Length: 96
Image 1 (tube, rainbow, N blue to C red):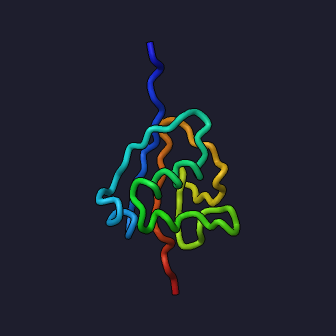
Image 2 (cartoon, rainbow, N blue to C red):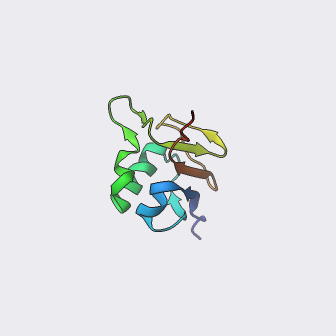
């Protein structure tokens, strides 16, 4: 009997919602999947603004993208995802 597949729940806002054409995604993950792998997978599937989520110079989430994992802002692309994690992908709020 196969073990159940792990998955993450992704909520999209701003242009990411427009690019994907939906506001929520349930995405399957393998054990020890890193945030980088997930973001790269979304970039391949949806293109557009998802191609800009990774800053290849710093090796972190781009400063123009806000990624939250279970309610906490995250920039480290090596962060491992777990079954039923909740990711939010949006743009940082502008203040002033």
